[in-house]
Image (cartoon, rainbow, N blue to C red; front, side, top):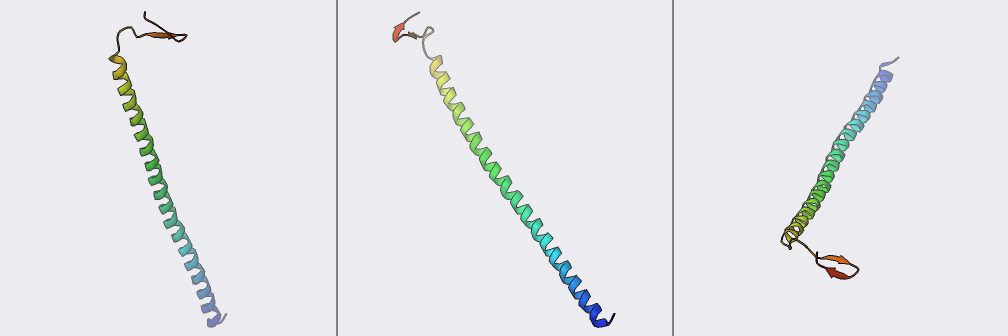
Length: 85
């Protein structure tokens, strides 16, 4: 094998290695970016769920205070008539 052929094969193999290495590096960078974006999106969704849950709890707290301030024997509704027990 002549020197010219050896150099040609060396250039082809080194170019192929560079392409493979660049592809792996881009895949690794993109994978970490996608993981970061997915994690941020999940955190935002969790914050929305927590905020909604806290809103519901505050509504329930207000209702519980209203119910606790009603008389001991609230009227019961039976057939449209109010009957005091």
